[in-house]
Length: 223
Image (cartoon, rainbow, N blue to C red; front, side):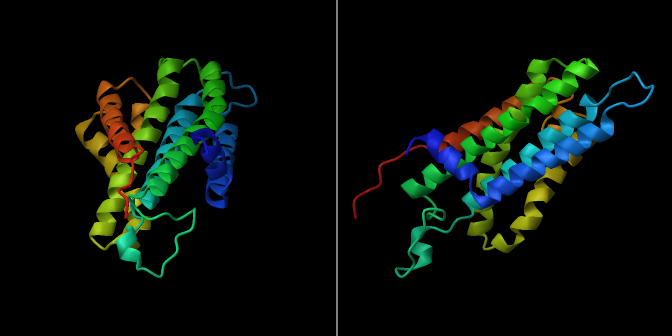
């Protein structure tokens, strides 16, 4: 199965389909609430739509990346366990393919929601270029997926997988706290999308590279 077909199949599963539906619903609500009405001629919808979209995409990438990274290894499952195609053991060829398909499906979610950013940008005339407005969420999605892989694996090794639902929003909150404290745009997708940030771009590219290396196709040793 090609990566494109695997991404389409991954996106069609219930968890991602519900996530995409919720993301679209949230963006529709935000756009409707921020779009000017009546006699108002000032349109600042992009100032809210873009950060919300970037943050939700990063949160989704972090959550699904952590779920993939937290998968147990084959030796942890026992000889009697028979893995399904949806839950391959960590480190196997199937796990790498599942991770790559999940990342590709997240990129598809980025593409599907891009019109919200384009529409609000065209109506608001913000000082930020459309190119960066689209690039920052893409970098954040890929980078936070890589961060999620590491987070999930760390929690699995530390036997703290039960804390995963708390750890994911805590990491994103810590990124916001860091940017606010240091008055910079280095980690939080909310602030990064509001202005070009080479530090954010570099940080996300490093995390994306680590994710690509982790999920690279490898030949498994023969038993």
